[in-house]
Length: 452
Image (cartoon, rainbow, N blue to C red; front, side):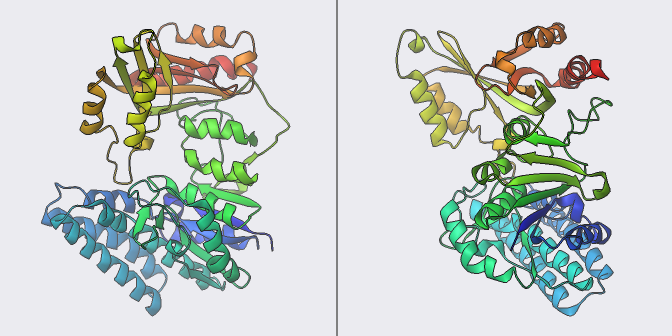
């Protein structure tokens, strides 16, 4: 049996009409046996606000009402089938109970349990939409198979355990029905609910595809594939019909919103092709991400990742000494921080961090405890309000003239960092966030539009 895992994001399951479009996409092909859904658009943000310490009783009631309204509108369109209504009522009641509990005793375990409820609602409703169209379908609790560690807010999947549990509990169901399950969430060995971090629904879909030996992952979103840059920044941005894993991984890592950065990892491990398309306009096609592609241009795309932080570390201990970098990275590792870019001089280290490193509740990992620990062996300076712009392509590090073309565009701008050479697929610059749109537009015009 050939298996495809189809994932639908929040805008794709925002309401009954959107769910119907997605159901038609699923039913047009017998291969999508597993459907992974996000929470309906807006629900996760409301749930995140519910977890915040400042939310009082009246605001909490407003948020609960807003969440229920989104779900009940879909239920009403379905005709309020009794079994679905009962399950939805139970989930909404649990949200209210968890939010009350969290207001009295704040902890990450309860926070994750609360944040997971949006996907529970949408999976129950989407399965009902499929059944309404005559398909055998049921909602499956992904926590039965998505085993993770206990790092609440940003849990790490246990790959071998996920595969074993999928083989035991999920695979046997697929021959007779479509399974609708949740992205973003999992459970640790004790059964406590965990989350994979914001944007983790794509990752969930890829992990399930890997565990089930699927032939493809379909990521259905609100744009028809991947473009050479954000069309809002460059009106002449081009759709990309096909792209390699390496290029897509670079684009996802450096800010392309269509894919979550981690999504590509399970696909790379098992050479599972990934399709990205629009659930609103599936007839427009999309982008295939494959292990090998026919066309490998020098310039594939320009991407931007906003809301960056530059961490500057200064210490005379670095001068002709060993161990400073090892101690610095050990400190960052203890605080679960992954460094993006790094440049060094004799007495300075500059590191970039971004908010994809935040946990599910949006809490920054650049904590006071971390800064105090770093300050014990160096002077620390933090710069915010920055954006990382990356040129993604092939053989960038070994092609003459690339830097000249890029630096011509950058001449009017203050560049805080330049990284090139570690990968043949990218050249990155850090600029003020206020200048990012202008830099992206100018780079795209210089690198891509001369051939138009």
